[in-house]
Image (cartoon, rainbow, N blue to C red; front, top):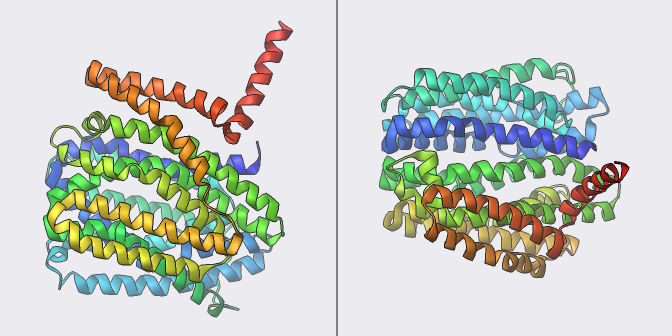
Length: 483
């Protein structure tokens, strides 16, 4: 197995575990806490996540990029690591001070102050997590095993300590402790690769891209994390509970493809540094094939069977999450393509200014739509805001990618793939009418899996699928003939 495949497997396990373990507890928590209790948790969680973005700024992308360049030289790597950590700690303490001040000023922050105080520890430990170091070193095996072990303890703790609708603070505390433990383990393990020192620092080199890419993350969060904060302040915790339920499962599923782009970024940076532009373009084509193979079957299933899926995941009382979920599901395709052209192309090309402009426009659209739609449509409005912002970002990002690389949106390929899946939507809708809810969901899942394989392999000629299935077929034929 190639290193990319190994890294992708480990990264996929890591990223999915980050969402899957909470998903294991999610059906239990939604029933114990109820919509309002879940909304309380989701508001505090989204607020802390937004301040984590302020604290981290562009550290994720910059850290991976710079560590990937210096990973063969311990001295240079230690110098880079120390410089980045110091910059990150400065912005972290600034973010904590701002949040502390706001807990005495903003009414919705005051009412959630207990959880926000706990969350300040999460902000600090999120900085000390230094996941970017291990991703840059492509050591996905360690962080995956560590994360799974900690998550197992976290899941057991949730079932043990979260008992009624008033335990949303305990639920939040447990999620924070998971980050604290992970960061401690990472700091200890990092000593194998780097030595932290205040000597020979080179802060100036990293400050500009750190701020620019950080601004990109902050502005991007205007239509993700900020959506939840604004929705909570305008419409209350119940609507936050609906929106959080609608987006939780989507986030889990999309995390698998995010793992793929996270693995590809350091590899794409290396290809550019080595001047291998043809390999760079081939990787992009493979990424598109992977996206279409991954997203289109899931979009079909989630659009048709959303009520059943919501009922399985969240239980009774979350019908308000059905329409928001149907609105955000197509974002799998939009955001997946965005990640390819921004994370795998613009970031390795170091087109940081283009990324900043892109995010500014997307955030502006998101802010405007929030003001117009959320007070009227509540959680449905938040879902529309997210979609509108992401489509805007995709269009502008594609403009810059075409400008700098000549790569154009493969619109014919994407449209042909979408049209190929249309008959499966009709069949699933028919199954939904003819069969009971749960039988329709099961039969629909089996049908879409088979349909997707046949269409992708024979009609769409998906290179990713063919490259991995053909060797298996050949081996099976050899075994059969040998008998």
